[in-house]
Image 1: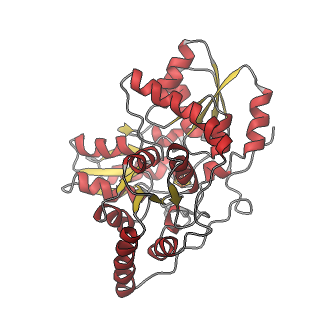
Image 2: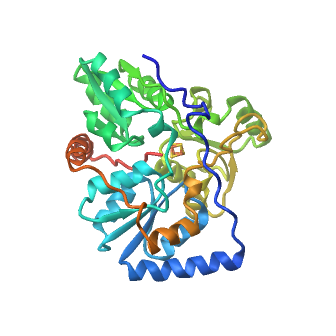
Length: 352
Ligand code: SF4
């Protein structure tokens, strides 16, 4: 069946960047946000790929910076009645699925993800229906409706273990939506997998040739790669892993210089984990001038201070709602992963 061309800008136009703010405006927004978080009994949870000042604000105000599942878990355990999720749409949905009794708001509901966009519910259901003998495994970066259609939801840190387990039990697997991560998992496990052809517009742009050239200039550097990157980029990595795993690797690797192939928003937490190390962005789209995402997700960048302040002031049109029926269905594959992780004493941190 015909799948979306995820790179076609007429299907996925990049959003406009928030208007730049001067120092005075930024300070005023931050102060107002702090006050509103208290007044509204809300907590700010931010993804690793949001801008550093948003991550810093989440930490300063008692919120957290994490991957989507950890964001949802933190929100679940936090006493605040409202969760303000700075990230992309599927992250707000995951928070709502795991904490339906709380109000979940986002700086903008327009912030989406090329993996989510590239895996529309009906086309995906049709694809699954064509292969009824397959077990459906979907990555966390999907809509609630796609999760509801799946047998398993996985994060990048647990994907190999789950697929290995399913393969050992003789399952044939449908994997969606990221073709690079799916290819990586298939290679690691040897499992038979039908891959949906989605990709992340940030990771897909990392280039192996330019990365090799950069490594020649920094021969002592270690290369850290997120497995949503192309196979040729993953092949030259010293460490491959989810966001949380890459931060841990940055700390434990002995190298003083790190070349990092994932969204550059992660540098904020990486630098915190190892302040004495030098971080270098992996090259995208050739020599940089022609890159489209330039190692920063355009949808994550929509989570600016102004949008956060507006969501706290007036949440109308910014609240995440997920149909009760969908929540019930999506919880089944999500809980299957959480149960598997618990039984196998694995961590499930680490989707994009
Ligand atoms: S960085 Fe990639 S996977 Fe993450 S939200 Fe953006 S488009 Fe989606």
